[in-house]
Length: 95
Image (cartoon, rainbow, N blue to C red):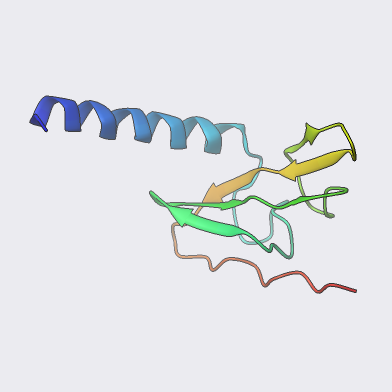
């Protein structure tokens, strides 16, 4: 792979992450990031809660409908900066 292509890919990835974080209202550990998250991912200096279910959990700011049939399904797509290091919230308890 040519170095120019690699640099372009890295720049695009940075722009995507910055765009996601710019739309998030999360700023620190006491923010609107969900208090629990079953699918928390960290990459490129950011954390993302990517839970899917019949409703969005409390604290989810970026809730979107991802499926309407046969059952309406929602996805929480919240993101926040992982610097300084903030661990992912604990998994949600299934009641």
